[in-house]
Amino acid sequence: MKVQVNEERCQGHGLCRLSAPNFFFARVEDGHAEVRSEDVPDEEREAVLLAAESCPELAIDVSD
Ligand code: SF4
Image (cartoon, rainbow, N blue to C red):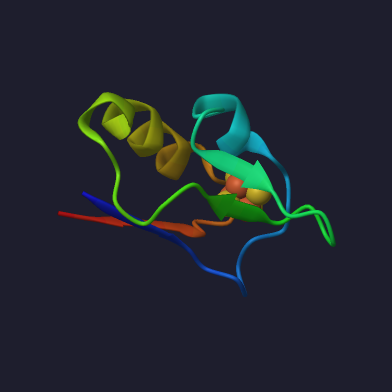
């Protein structure tokens, strides 16, 4: 599975970090989300899907 954060949509709420703390990080400059990598390892899959569902800006795109 692949994941990307839409830069224009992300508002830096940080809910993604609560759902997948090992995968999403806050960018120092503005708190917007960054991902550890575009490729999601199997052990992070459920957490990343939860993060995508919980993002209020629909800024997290996942694809297989
Ligand atoms: S929850 Fe969505 S809008 Fe908030 S920081 Fe994460 S990706 Fe950005």
